[in-house]
Amino acid sequence: MTSGVLANFWGNKNFEFACVESSGHSGGMVWMWDPKVLKIEVVLKNRHFLLIRGSTVGSGDPINLLNVYAPQNTVAKRNLWDEISSVIDSSVGAWVLAGDFNSVSSAEERRHSKFKPVCANQFNEFIFNNGLLEYPMQGRRFTCVRDNGKKLSKLDRFLVCSEFFNKWPNACVRVIQCYKSDHSPILLELVDLNFGPRPFRIFNSWIEKAGFECDNR
Image (tube, rainbow, N blue to C red; front, side, top):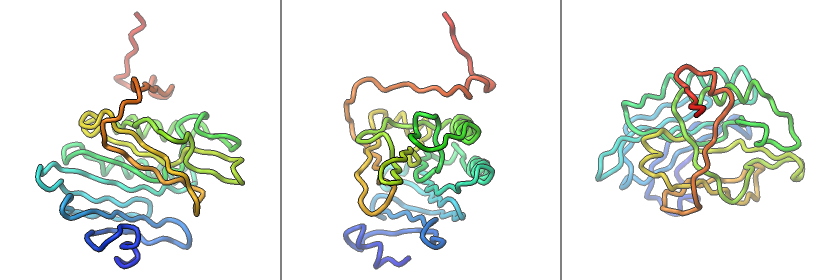
């Protein structure tokens, strides 16, 4: 992947980038950033994720951005969750994970396609164990549309650490209509939008985790 090709997406040449090349028609990942906004010091490449680590220019706040392209196989996904978990370290700044996780967290995130409870439980365990949170999604409920609109899934998302979430509590994820792909682009909008009270979500698999307590009063 060349800077000339990426400039068509960015709009000019005032950017830096890191990428993992695709395998055939799938698997490619890229981060692009404005060096006047982000100072990136570390790039970690993996077949299924791309991590850039640095700080915001001016404030110097450390930030970790991890792009994910998860495999389809359940065992391979579990191995990926373990590998990403070994990389996440809250002591080195805020974390933002984004991309195609190829997993849903509940049956409601699939329509007319097979739901795998084991895969969902493993994904929810990964989210819970790393203290990750998700913003409400606006525009569309599903990000992947296949078979002429018959099969719908929410496979693409942003997951952020509590530090990032607390700094931008009113942000949201907006789903953009897709044209050339079966996946819709998603945008994380860090603006003060008022969509009413933030919904609270809980997964059944969390209840069995150590340290999770329910007040039945």
